[in-house]
Image (tube, rainbow, N blue to C red; front, top):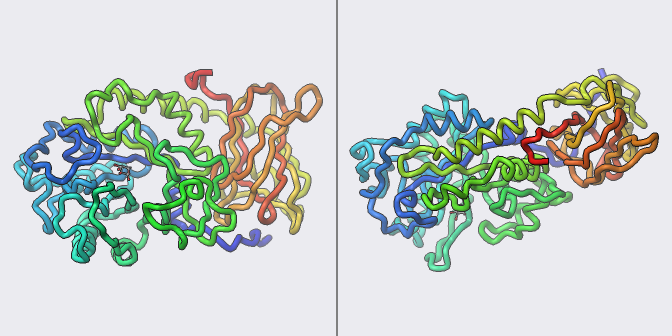
Amino acid sequence: MAEDIRPMDVLPTKQQIEYQQMELIGFIHYTVNAFTDKEWGDGTESPSIFNPSKLDTSQWARVAKKAGMGLLIITAKHHDGFCLWPSKYTDHSVKSSPWKDGKGDILAELSRSCAEMGLKMGIYLSPWDRHEPKYGTDEYNQYYLNQLEELLTNYDKISEIWMDGAKGPDAKDMEYDFQAYRTLIRKLQPDALIFSDAGPDIRWIGNESGIAGETNWSTINNDEITIGKADTKYLNSGDPDGKRWVTGECDVSIRPGWFYHPAEDDKVKTPQQLIDIYYKSVGRNGVLLLNIPPDRRGLFHENDIASLKEFRQILDETFKTDLASEGTVKASNYRQTHPKFSPSNVLDASSETYWATDDSIIESYIEITLKQVSYFDTVMIQEPIRFGQRISTFAIEACLDNQWKQIAEGTTIGYKRLLRVSPVRTDCLRVLIKESKDIPAISNISIYKSSPGEGR
Ligand code: FUL
């Protein structure tokens, strides 16, 4: 049995690989803001205004599942400090609200609904807290840790913890003890992934439009990053010399705001806009974190659901038939001419098998002859990231009128790269690897014709 290729020095963990394979995950922004029409509550809101009439976490989970999401992250506490669970460390929570006579617990309900739908759950616990009087003193760090402990022990498995660096100009000075937060998370939920500008497991992609850089390395040097003050360009493209694997997460809301505002009911992103974001996030080695804010009833709004549904239909239609799957493959070189590294491995739709070249062979190509002449406009390439991220320059050529013609070029690939190429009709294409940090390896190449729903 041939040995696998030598892994790069910086590798993802099993949890990071599983996380990236989810591709699409959901964000739920909910708090008193849904009732005050604000984006940032100031912490003086009375819990008595929090009274959703039909809150139904199973509707959220059902819609998310149908859209193809694998995880739902909820604002357990946003900047206004109002807690969606009855925390014993504050009264500023659902327990002081009229919702379910103060006996409700949104985290418990969501945790059940996620389990029923086979979804993972994550929490956003805002470090910036505009209500809690301890904020600005060291005691606040203990308050935050206490709340983390409640959330990480009372609600089953928590898969992601989201910590943002946002702070208004009026915020009191406060040194967050991120190190202590992380230590507690690792102790209570060792498999949970921690998100912040600096990771350590998942990093912000540097904008709130859901768009990863065309070049997107999953590696960065996060020791140099201060949460809330990060260089957004650096986060957007990652760093080929990064010493840590910190997967990029692309957050964006389906509406202009993160929270529900009735005036935005007709400003929900169209399925085509969502598709475009998908190609620029998932298609650029990122994970798409799409926010759907429940309305005052406590439900996802009909318009958001309709858009999500069509978005999913377009994706399913586009990626239903891989026009390359029955083709034949050859490569300029393959490692030890051993079947384990055979170029045909790129067509078997498995991320386990892969093509790789012999030691020190970087410049190379892999050529696919389709079973029949086909019309396509989308190419997908994947690296087996368990061996690290390698490729840094590639091109795609199609055989047109008996000549190779470049139809796309790119830099990084990573877990998944989707390229929208000008439509071509051919039975032959090749992927050329030009530069790579070590010998290249590719697990999949697929080609598709995008669904007309995409608006072409
Ligand atoms: C930011 C917050 O200030 C916004 O309100 C929103 O929650 C966004 C996802 O993160 O840091």
